[in-house]
Structures are given as structure tokens and as C-alpha cells.
Image (cartoon, rainbow, N blue to C red):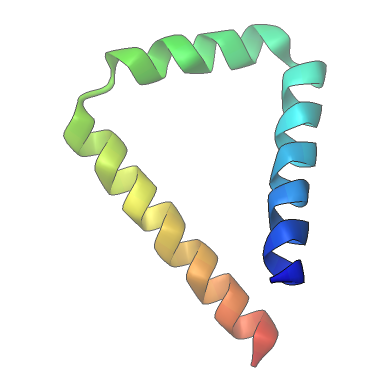
Length: 61
């Protein structure tokens, strides 16, 4: 459970740094996401989840 909480904290820290360092690019990315079809967003989300699980599996094994 602690690993999960640390992972959430890491995600928040990294996203916070990106928004602080590149606010204009973050706004543009949000605008692009709104224009992207749901199927593409779903595919990218699934791909990212799979890559994340593989990375965790490789590090933990």
C-alpha cells in the first residue's frame, strides 16, 4: 500500500513540475486532448497502462 501512495506522490510531483515549467505547452496539450477522438485517447491510455505495468514488473522482478 505504501508503494502505491509513493507512486501517486511521484505522479503528482512530476505533473506539477511539468505544469510549472511549461504552462503554455500544458494548455496546448489540454486543448489537443479535447479535440482527439475518444478511441484514440482510449488506445493511448491502454498502451500507457501496459507500458507502466511492464516497467513495474521489470523493476520488481
